[in-house]
Image 1 (spheres, protein in one colour):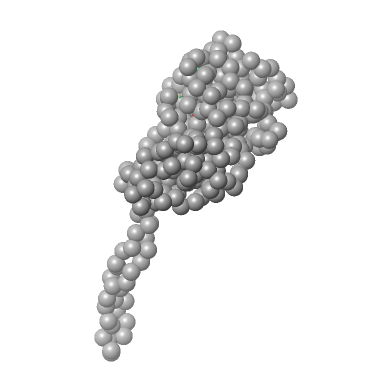
Image 2: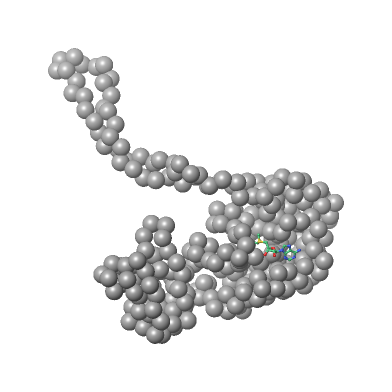
Length: 289
Ligand SMILES: C[S@@+](CC[C@H](N)C(=O)[O-])C[C@H]1O[C@@H](n2cnc3c(N)ncnc32)[C@H](O)[C@@H]1O
């Protein structure tokens, strides 16, 4: 498996997602001879995982069962070890679309953080594109590099351990798109402009606070970026429930008397705890003129 190409069978070294039930899952690194404990009992990698198809239902030692899923960037985002705050799939999907990412795109990103967005970018730009990602925290940069290797996507990504505000992205005039998720993005706008192709490209900056957005928009305008737009994307999730609702008496025929009763309906109920503010997404274009 890799996070870019689907493979049928689980093999040693793969990352698999163990799905225990609604909202309950975790990743495992498949290793011959290894065991993983779950509340349903032990999963023995050699017997239960290696050679089985992804998507299999695996019976654990206590008789309970789990599903073993092929990894995707979306599942990884929900299961990855957090070394920083991360971006979630709602923001990631709009970033991917508004940056016009596609196979072959060259993308610059900073900071790498926990690599949540990086995995999604790599999946979108492969097999002919590339991600240049910059992270100034040495351990985070190292850990991200290790993960990209484990997930067999390292040939589509270069990790640079440097300060993007001082040293930029390490590439010049190659990028179709630049993404920033750092505390002071306005200090990196000049470097973003330099990283983007001469003929232009797209930029996105993610910031939780409106004061950061104001400074970023100002810097974007000063550097000649156009089409500056700030968005916030809010996700609303629904549970499906069965409800008993009274049948209405529409006051029609009296003879025979209307038979009132209840009918069952399937209804969508918004979750009580909705996801709140994550951040503002500021988009802009580098123009040729
Ligand atoms: C919020 S995290 C990014 C999370 C990432 N978008 C994800 O989805 O996992 C921000 C990262 O930027 C890094 N960072 C902050 N300022 C930086 C700078 N000037 N140059 C390079 N990295 C920087 C931090 O060390 C941190 O790891």
